[in-house]
Amino acid sequence: MTPKIIRTIAELREEIAARKSAMTGNPTVGFVPTMGYLHDGHASLLRQSSSDNGLTVLSIFVNPTQFGPGEDLDKYPRDEQRDLNVAARSGADLVFIPSVEEMYPRRRATSVTVSDVTERLCGASRPGHFDGVALVVTKLFNIVQPDRAYFGMKDAQQIAVIATMVRDLNIPVEIVPCPIVREQDGLALSSRNVYLAPEERKQALVLSQSLSRVTEWIRGGMTPQQTIQRLQEEIRRAPLADIDYVDVLKYPDLVPAEADRPLSEADGRLLIAVAVRFGKTRLIDNRLINPAEVGADICFAK
Image 1: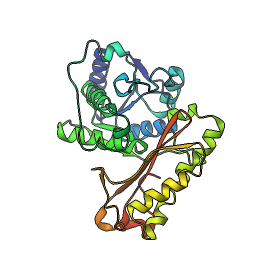
Image 2: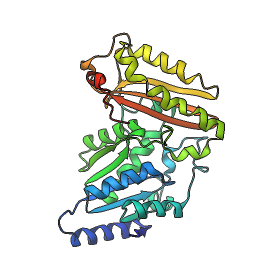
Image 3: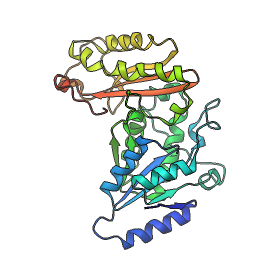
C-alpha cells in the first residue's frame, strides 16, 4: 500500500486523529523517526511497528540542530523517492516529511538537555549533538503522540538518551529498541556507508569482526581495560582506521565498568561501543552483552 505523504504538522495531526477514530481492534500508533536515506535497518523498524500497531508513522527529517560545525549536514545523503519506495514496502501508513521551516519556524528559545548518559561516547566527541537529538525527538513525540517509538540498537547511546528523556519528562511513549541489521559481510547498515570508498568499505569490516570476538575475550577473563586495549589493537590492523573511541560501559546508564576487574554477573548488561573514521566517514558499531550469559553467547544486538 502506498503511504500518504504529509509535509505540515497541522495536517499530520488531523490525519492521525482521523485514522485513529476509524480504527478498530488495535488503535495504537507506532512511530519510526529517521533522517531518511532509508536502508534495510529502517525497514526492519517499520515492519516491527506495523506488526505491533494499527497505524505506523514514519518521519524523514535531516535535523540541523544535531549537526555540529564542520559535520556533514549539507552532504548528508537525501533521496525522497528512494525513501518512499522503502516506506511503501515496509508497512508505513503515513510519511511525515517536514521542511526545516516547518519544524523550526522561528528562533528557538527552548532547549532539551539530557545529562550523564550524553557525556561519553558520541556525546564526548560531538558536543551538542544529543541536545539537538533530544529537542527534535521531543518535538516529534509531541506532534505524533505515538504509543510506541522504534529505534535501532546501532545507535545504542541515542536509545539510552531518549529513554532517559522520556522517563524524566513523563512522555507517554514506549521506546522499543530493535536489533542491529547488518550487511551479509557484517558491516552495520548506515546511511553514511554510501560515503565509503571501496578500500574504506573493505577495511570497515574490522569493526564487526573485532566486536564479534568480545564474548570470547570476556569468557576468557579479560577485564574491561584489557578488552578496550585488545579492540584497539584489532581495529588498528586496518591501516585506514582512525579511532574516535572504544569503550566498555554499563547499559543503559553508560557508566564505566570497573576497569581492572574481570566482568561478572553483577555488572549486568554491558555495551562495548566503537566509533572509527575511515577517510571522512565516521562509523559506529557496538555489541551489547550480559556477562552472566556469555557461556551461552547471548547477545542483544546481533
